[in-house]
Image (cartoon, rainbow, N blue to C red; front, side):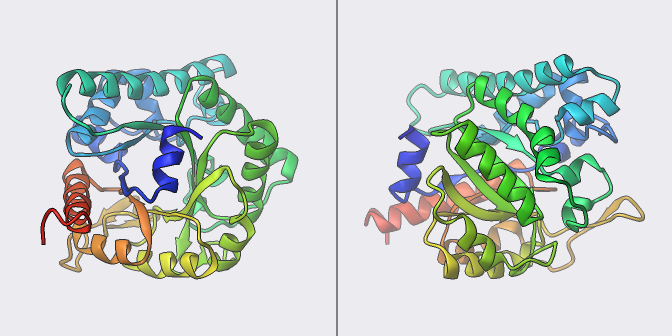
Length: 319
């Protein structure tokens, strides 16, 4: 059992990083319409590393590499060949590892552990029309396999600590991903996180059913939800916990809403901060907490502080 698997199995609460694209935009990077933030691997790899490092400085234990959209199919649409696509996946892992090494060098006496997660986004992301938030597509098992396999293989060969099978909107796609994991790469840990609307996948399938279907997969160290509405996250966690004893992971968006027609974000009007939800996610059973679209290093720093405070309370060091 790997170190991250042992920590999760022992009930350790871990802090996941937050949005990558948002931070790259702040640094002046224009998002590639086909590759999204993965386009920065080609044009601004130094800035990708910088964002990773910033999340570590704010307390993240897990860095998700910049490969959500980095499939051979997406790179082909953007004018690159398969070798160039695979090379960029390798680069994404290298940049996260370099950020971790730099952090360890800067904080030699810090006990903050850092793990690298290989990002596997859904086929819907390749369509670049918001399909991962609807789940209104269907491929054969063979086509799902062809789409996902090469990126998974390269990520594992590049030495990630864990795979993030994330923003998955459909059970059939999740089943193929899990089949690849268990039959082609036995022993490699992963988490499976769904694109959900409350207690249902965005495809309409029941989230509890999803939890039941994958609860007995030993390589899946956690089940969860990500990239959804922040106010619906607790409902999703509750549905998962009712159906599964697996550790839970949650990393929703920051509360802003994206308008696909206007291609812009509407700011969160609720008045609640990202960190306001963290205690209820912990209460609902979340063991790994981070952020997705529009979340910031400061949001992740707040998550880290809350989790740290909880640990001190649990150990009796503070009351």
